[in-house]
Image 1 (cartoon, rainbow, N blue to C red):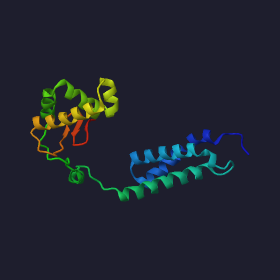
Image 2: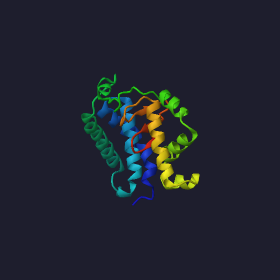
Image 3: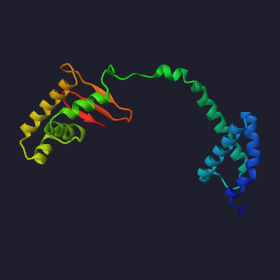
Image 4: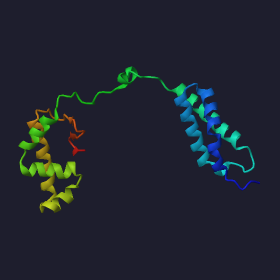
Length: 186
């Protein structure tokens, strides 16, 4: 048995691995990727290498398996360099898009301080009615009434029909949703 660590011998096999990878892939960039992948896999699985066996054969087997795994994966993939297929898979928003974030911001700014406060605390921050009641020093019923009136007033200012539930998406990714049960900004 040799005292030499097989990890130290990997570098000696890189040129042969690259030549083998190039013969399989017929593409220099893919060959380099395969060699790198084989070395990483070998390095992370050295506990499975049996000392005294042929290191080069073990590395070539890993590289070969990586090549065929890539081939199987690529057969399941569809090439779409111009994003033709991807564009066809896009799904529009679930709402009709008639509501812009600026309309929401304008309407929200017109609410009273009490209404903005409860909508932010209950809806955006997710506090319970009880928590908000404790924070503001009022009864839970008062908070429930304020939230209900604030939602109705906001819907009115935005010109929404009863039960209509807008979703607003801003350029920044801010999302605000108003429904009969909750108001959220995420």
